[in-house]
Image (tube, rainbow over the protein chains, first blue to last red):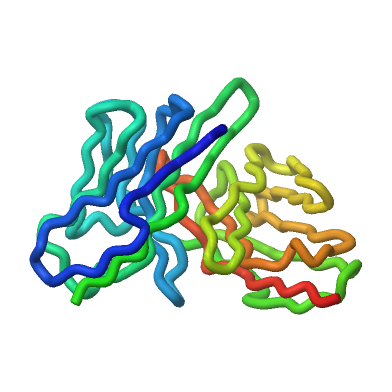
Length: 114
Length: 108
């Protein structure tokens, strides 16, 4: 079964305490990405990765880091979280197969930074 | 730049039709459509690649007019399960930018 998993699903933390949200996919997809979703602002892309060791900034990368050491994993790192990073985060995994385009989102991680 | 969706919200009775529009100030090369139900992750519906292309997902179809830099999503004979927020997404390079969403409520 095609699956994108994220952990943790919920996290309450304090300003400045480093955290990592993990994302893993079981479909051998090349392209993975992170989004944040905020009321009134919709979904915004944070970072994306075209393949292992290839990452690039999306529209709102400030305050975030990513790495892609293995194809299946794409963790999102907040080195020094701030309250404005309180949001709902989604990881997504994408591939083109011939004429077919597949994209799956993880279940989301609700982060609160106090 | 974020594509603009209209309307922002629509209420339908089961069996009625609706159209959601997505327009961009930039040239469009592809348009993605998603549906997100409350408390859930977005679900990819379809991608349109060429001007004039139309696609379908159940009774949900879409068209893409690259000259007008817009795409439309058609909800035909709506079902209760069509309720949710619909987003369009446009690609620039390898980045994906989403519209603000259209809330759809289908009532019995």
